[in-house]
Amino acid sequence: MRNRLFLPLFYLVITSALILSGVASAYEVNKNAIALLIAKDKAGKTVGTGSGFVARPEGTLITNYHVLVDAHTVDVHFPDGSHSAVEGIFKVDRARDFAVLKLKEGFYSTLEIGDSVQAHDYTSALGYPSAQEAKDRDQLVQTYGFVLGVHPQAHPEIPFIYTTTPFSPGFSGGPVVNSSNQVVGLATIEGRSINLALPINSVKEFLNEKTAFSFQQLLNEDQTSLEAMYYRGNFFLYGLGDPDKAVAQFEKILARDPNFTLAHYDLAVAYRDLGMPEKSIAQYEKTLELSPNFPEALSNLGGYYFRSGKLDQAVELFKKAVQVYPNFIQALSNLGAALNKQGQPEEAIAHLKKALSLNPEFAIANFNLGNSLFALNRLDEARKKFELSQKQGIDFLSMHWKLYEIHKKNQNPLSAKKELKTILEIDPSNEEAKKKLSELR
Figure 1 (cartoon, rainbow, N blue to C red):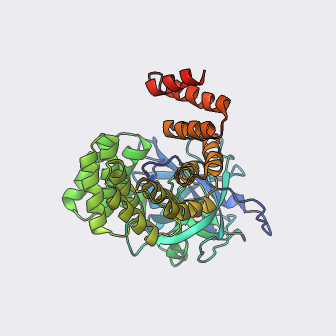
Figure 2 (figure 1 turned 135 degrees about the vertical axis):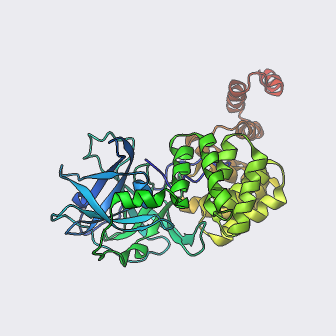
Figure 3 (figure 1 turned 90 degrees about the vertical axis):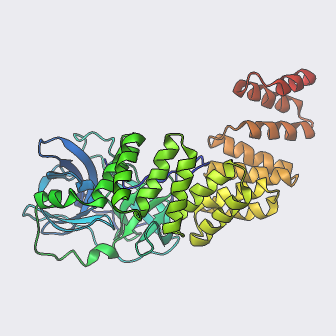
């Protein structure tokens, strides 16, 4: 399954997205309108899978453009066991990453098309995880969350719905619905706790097209399409885990168009994966030169500066990311961590509390908040945050040292001893921990 963009965010341990409960709908989503798409090349080999949904009963189906890259045919399967084939393409928009397809003649179940969304609106996404074997076509998955905001990403003129509703690989092209089960977006980009959906208003005007063209025409056009090259490189990087192939593809794009923002962004990720931080930083800087308000690029470059000790630059970038995207959970947490390092725990607390109000299960934000409270000598509160983050998956050496200090000050030698033993499990040669453990004995 090709994923348009998997958002790599530095210095973050991201837990599962917040799941909303108690949101009642007047009726269930019409799941028989939601399709598994299997794209095949001329030899009949599967080149990708994705999701889609029917918007018109005569067989007008919506999905992501990137699901179609290199496809010669696309088979469409529905939860009730029925299937169809794509007979033509009404519309593709490579920049916005959507496609409107024509199914073979028939009468199909549909989803109702909705309108725009606002921050904190309920959302649910439906799709077929790509890890799911094609034979299990009835395994449609539904996830839940809420809207964080509607913001541009790499292209200022193209907005996305930022949502906590998680998209698995394979959800691409599937519907994102509101509390009335109306489609408000197209699941497009998975990014751990940031998931991006294209607003359905970008697609609406093309739902009544009558003239379709063939996959062969699309293949011919895609031979020279920079967007098609980008999605191939994206697939090499995130789908196959092959950054070398991705670098070659992105460099080909930039040789033709040095201002292709997303190619710079993902080239930065590829260089990061290859252990080339200087090259990665240069590509993030170029990304921001072309798109100064690209939130993820701001946060990722700030992460590099944070690691290298350039705290002032890191704080500046994190603050700008939060200014552009006020509900950017990771940037809020990163900003809190950087402010802690600068010795400003009181200022950090406000950002960290906001991150946790959006996602209480965000482990790294709980850890960072524990650091703030520890610096302010609010030890009992700090202990609770550290223990909560530990339950959520954090196991940092620094956290165990702080817990040791808290237990020692609270005259709790057994708990202090336990933390020293944990430190030695993580770092068996830690002489300081050995010495303190000996003193406790």
